[in-house]
Amino acid sequence: MSGPLPRPLPRPLPHDALTLDAIRTCLEGVIPGTIATADAVGTPNVSQLSQVHYVDPGHIALSYQFFNKTRANILANPDAQLEVIDPATGAQYRLRLAYLRTETEGPLFESMKAKLSGIASHVGMAEVFRLRGADLFRVVAIEAVPGGAPLPAPVRPRSLLSAVRRACEGLRGAADLSDLLDRAVAALRDLFGVEHALILLPDAASGRLFTVAALGYEASGRGSGIGWEVAPGDGVIGVAARERVPIRITHMTTDVAYSMAMREGTAAGIAHEIPFPGLDRPHSQLAVPILASSGACGDLAGVLFVESAQEMRFTYDDEDALATLAAQLGALMRGLPPAHGAEAEEMPAPAVAPPAVGTPITVRHYAGDDSVFLDHDYLIKGVAGAILWKLVRDHTALGRTDFTNRELRLAPDIPLPDFAENLEARLILLQRRLADRCGCLRIEKTGRGRFRLLVEKPLRLEEMQ
Amino acid sequence: MRRERGLDETVRRFLDRSLSVNVATSDHDGRPLVARAVAARVSPGISPDGERLTVLIDGRANAVLVAAVAATGRLAVVFTEPSTHRSIQIKDDGATVAAPTVDESALPGPYIDGFIAELAGMGFTEAFVRAVMAFDPADLVALHLEPADVFDQTPGPRAGERIPA
Image (cartoon, rainbow over all chains, first blue to last red; front, side, top):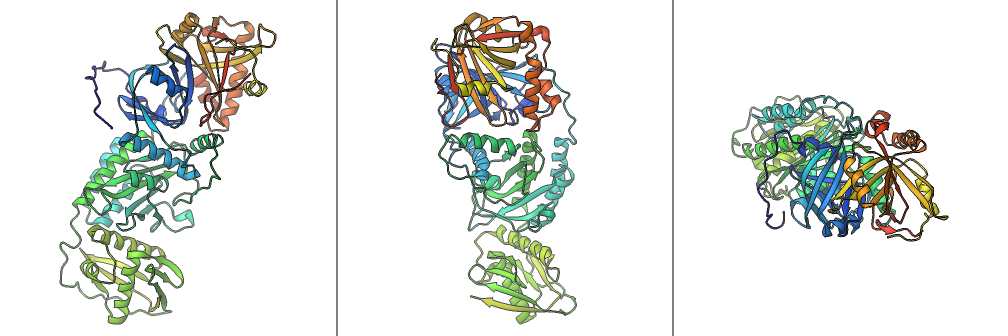
């Protein structure tokens, strides 16, 4: 937040007073809120709000995109009243608000901007969604409207608090990064009931993110998800990565309809949808940055991404739960024993793999971008491609099958940035891509910092310039 | 604020359907108050070329707002079509509060039915819409105003522009 906040000591509320946290499902954007303001002479104005941003238990913020009557009024008279509806029960609440200030930088502004760009990048609307400021309000009082006939609150299928606890317990004791990622995905599936998830790690050099763990994309027709890439700032994953804030979209159809209504009032060009890894028609998405303290990509260690074909699948509570899980994941990633720290100089027992027989596989390498094709099918590129090319060359020329991370790090023909985690991540990517695509060429871990290339068919290498 | 009366034909057509209707007023201290209405109707007004707008509201759930309208006459009503976000705001500073006539008491039934049909396409169930709109008929209050000012309130850069009569 910009500048010191002269905040009076909060008056203690009665223990049973309604808190903003208890009703924040009303701020999900499923049903627009309605705000009443008044100008200096008391003329009222009433306006619907597509997004009311939850800030903390005592504050909300509204996006300032256009200078409208609501905004003119709060500058003249900071008093406002907001009515919101619980999208599950229909219960209605009125919030007495006091406008504090408008922020044009800092975490609140960035997080609201990120959410707007996250929506906009799906429909080519980035220009229309320019955020001028975040109008911050103190929540003075919350009142349940004594009207309507609210439905009973639906029973949630699981306890998120329990899921977080068990997921964090399950991550402990992971042997290495690959194991840790697998445990995280298993926790999302088994404890959170998540059907589609990706864990992406950053490429130190390009800033792009690549998927190293995936859940539930086998039916996508575009592979398992391993190896999918996202540019920084692209979609909810890219924005979460760039801005280092969770980005959550709960009701894709509403968000898109709102953007279309806004676009009709502008000279924005043709809306073109940017292709995005993941489901073709997601209705809920949540991307949570995994933060670490060091690294060539600033403090970003990765992104945890979940999505669903169901609307409103991920709530504020899900965001809190997965942010807690991501924090634990980040801390554990930092604490993993470095893969090179205990690299043994001695080699493991020689492989007893049967000799490679059958129709040879053609491994083609393009030096320009280190892309590698197996029998004309694209497999991988970049650092992971360079690694694979070195492995198959050493295998065919020298008969080698056992390798160490250390020698890869020292190999002059592998353009590895000076970033230890990156090699580990690249090896995980390579191993999983090979497992996805071709059972007859695989990588198997044989110990800390050691692995083996398993070759079941003869290899024919082709180097292309 | 009293100006030439009469609603633009496009506005009149827009209002001739079930919409999301929300109202605001302010009390003598200028404190704004907001409420959701359950029905609205445009009818011929007192002046030959003018209209009267009637908004029906749960007077028990919104007792403070109703008292403020009665005291100050200030009223702003926003009509929104949920599927398009298209919105019109109408204001008057001479609004009045009255018990609904038999005719007016019959408005919410079909109005809410139409609203349910509008929201069904957006995934909201009838049970949900009825839960939000439910009221005891004995609590119904009518707010009357003569549209003095009409504004385009559709979100976007033109929100707040006055629509000439």
